[in-house]
Length: 133
Image (tube, rainbow, N blue to C red):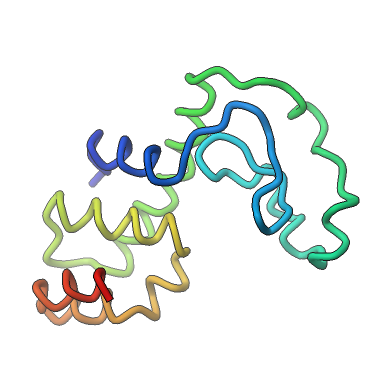
């Protein structure tokens, strides 16, 4: 299962699209739709991240095709994660919502969420309500 084009557009709208690298609030070099350029930087203490140079080859403007390709690769990880963590009861809408949620908060947080627990018990209405909590 893959996210819909509608979901991708929603994620782009909600997260924002940046074609030039920038430092996110966590001071990580980021580009595109919330793509952390060097995940190894996550292990660096927050106060030391200000001194990290932009990773080599990234000090440039990306094309929208590059941004879309990076986003597609990032979303593939979350699609696989949602299929593993929520293996039954998926409609396109539920899948899109779960992938969008995981993209925003991470697969670990999806795994521990009441949204996932309710979804996997078949309480789809409760899962939908949990999105609003």
